[in-house]
Structure formats: structure tokens, C-alpha cells
Length: 230
Image 1 (spheres, rainbow, N blue to C red):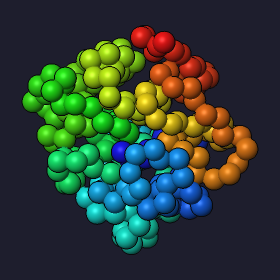
Image 2 (image 1 turned 180 degrees about the vertical axis):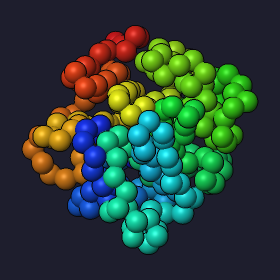
Image 3 (image 1 turned 180 degrees about the horizontal axis):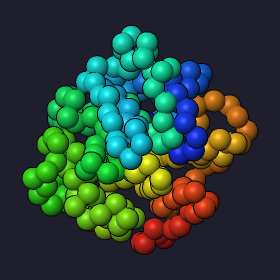
Image 4 (image 1 turned 90 degrees about the horizontal axis):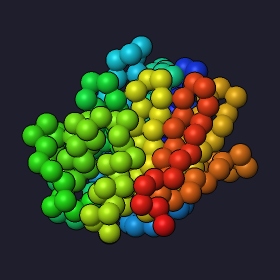
């Protein structure tokens, strides 16, 4: 299992989203509050952000809590759209930078919080790694991220044990699914946060319902049931 976070709004520092909050991703790497599966997210981390329309990434296979280089630079890195994650690797999956979210097709950044049986995933030659999340990301990119909800519903029907919380951003939109794990939303004056769990105790956090698609765009927020919802 993993934890992830997305931001869309005005330019803010990466530190203000990932490191500074009292229960941010750095803290969630060793003490998540709402994680149902696993106790640590020590198998890597990644932060993706947009430099204009270009996605940039900083990823590591080491725990976020020990990365002093990122800590020194993060206050100076600013962006209007961010996708970040800390990783708890699925058993038997490789621990390597290429297996660490966010993944990208050059336009979108994408993270997967969950697990899916690789036997239900079509072959994806463009996948960055053999891990389930990387293959799933390559499938989403091949289908088109606008079909994210359909992909999740189809895989969920094929693999009843799958947990398919995905989060994607392209600089102007965030898309996220809830399928088997938690997702919360915070509306701020300067933008919107989507996160696996709240990074502080602000009463404005809203829990998103399971098996839904959440879209954050400049014209508002929509929450739509996914196909197959019972």
C-alpha cells in the first residue's frame, strides 16, 4: 500500500505540501493515520510537478524521511500542479526508482495507491518497471487518462481483491479514483488538495466515497460513481 497527494491551484512550494504539514507525506512514510494495509511506506517516494506544461519528477527508492537533499531544495521548488507519493511495495515487487510513482507519459503524472494482480493486466511494453503499479500506469496511458474510471471499473470487476486508488494530474486537471481505500479532499483559498489521508486536522477535509471518480478542474469539482458500483 502507499500514500499519495495531488495539488491544483496557485504556485506553492513542494515543501508546503509534502514536508511541512504535521501529518504530511514525510510523516505518512513512517506513521500513516488511515492506512489499512501495512504500517510503513519506506520503499521509495516521488514528487512530480509541472514546470509550465512540462512534468518534472524527483524519485528515490529510499525512505522520504531520510532525504536531506530533497528537504533542502523543496522550499525553493514551486508549482501549480503536483502529484506526490510514498511507497510500500507489494510483496515480490522490486524496490527501485523505476517502480516508484509518479509515472508519466510526458503529459500526465500518475500514482497508484493499492494492489492489482498483474495477471489481469494486459502486456505493457512501455511500462517503466515490472511492478503492478507501473504496468497499470502504462495501461492507463495507453487507454488515455480520460478513460481512468472505465479502466478502474473493468479491472475491479476482473480482480475482486484489487485496490485501485489512482491519482493523475496534467497541469490543469486532477483525476482520482477511490476503489478500496481512502481519499480526502481539501478546498483551500489558493487551490485544492486530494490526499490518501488528511495532512493536518483542518475541519475542512472531506472524505470521498468509495468507488467514485473525482475530478478537479478550474471550473469546479465533480464526484461521479464508477460503473459497477453496488
